[in-house]
Amino acid sequence: MIDTHCHLNFKAFEKDADEVIGRTLAENIWMINVGSQLETSKKAVELAGAFNAPEPRSIVAEKYPQGVFAAIGLHPGHVTGHLLKNKLDSEELAAQESVKDFNIDDYRRLALGPGGRRVVAIGEIGLDYYYRPKGTARLEEFKNLQKRALLAQMDLAKELNLPIIFHCRSAHSDLIRILDARYQILDTSFRGVVHCFAGTWKEAEEYLKLGLYIGFTGIIFKQIPGIDFKEVIKKTPLDKILVETDAPYLTPPAASPERNEPIFVKYIAEEIAKIKKLSYQEVSETTTLNARKLFGI
Image (cartoon, rainbow, N blue to C red; front, side):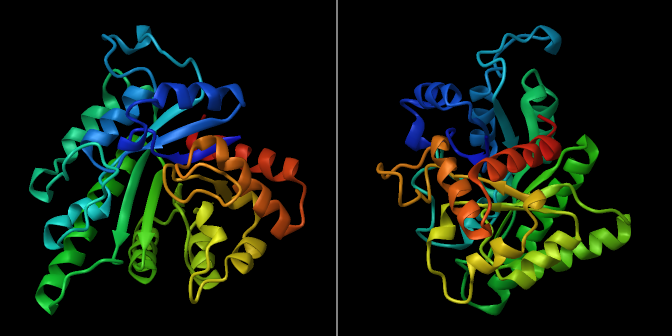
């Protein structure tokens, strides 16, 4: 099985990331560690075992021959964090990257550097309006900054021929409009996934029409007004579903520790199997094939 979205590159795992990776791989579960800014993107590549190795890339010594991959990108929360107060994520390894420090070339170099062969996606990038500033002018600036950073990183993904991991919270209508416009211009479907999906079936359907996968995490065990996770899971074709943990966040109820880990991705697959009335084996095998197809792993 493949946990297509986790954060062992975050503070919660700074003391035992290698230990967690070891016991996860021992259970034949692979993982993609996802960056949220430049420092955590670098850490994701480092955890894949190929960051500090010398050139040429063909002789990079790898700690993990297989099973550990990275995604790199600037999360929308970091793009506009300076416009909000006290909304920083305590799990981040480093201080928030300022929007004025955002340089797309830093991410390009990271993808093309010695560890770039383990970079399988650009992400997580997108829109996040859950916390927003007050005032019309500040809100417009807030949204425009996120959209510009998103488009720049989407262009990088196209340049590097990499899929995209989209983060979207309380902003599905805007993201769908942006993607639909880009779809019409490029006349092609997107390679990517809407991570930790928390929207309506109508919104999921729009993403599916654009060729995107839908990623499900432990959030499916929560009750969120206006969202029927069971309906979305039932109606989403199995061959368009990815399973994720978003570790260290969103621990499934069946996992006893408070800290989520990639090894708990099995509980997401079990719940999807239950809702869709399928076997666990079919869900685990199909979502693994989906991940291999999307990320080329």
